[in-house]
Image (cartoon, rainbow, N blue to C red; front, top):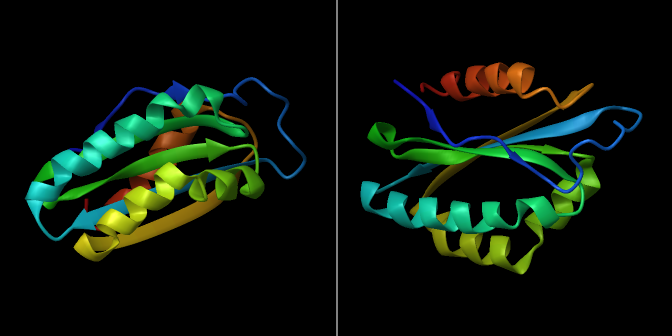
Length: 134
C-alpha cells in the first residue's frame, strides 16, 4: 500500500544546534474504526501543522495517510522529549485526542537521531509504519 505524505514542514527549532543526545523522532499511527472519520482527522492534523513554525522545540513534521487502511498520523522531529510533551499538552492537541480516542487505535514510536535529515528520517518512519502492515 502507498503511504501518502505531506511535504516536510519546518518548525521553530529547525536549524538549531543538535543537543547532546540528539533529536527525538516521534511517529503517531492512528487507525480509525470508520473511514468517515478520516476527513476530520486530516483537517485537525493540518490545523495543528499550521502552527508548526511557531512551536517551541519543533524541528519538522510530515503528516501521512493510508486512506484504504483508515490510517493517518504524523512523523515529527523534536529538539527533545520536553518539546514533544509540550506539544502533546497543547489544548488544541488534547481536544483532538479526546474527540477521536474512542474512534480507533493509536500506535506510537520514538527514537533518537543525530541530525534533522528528512532523507534519513522518513525511510525509518516508513519502515516503522510498514511494520504495522502498511
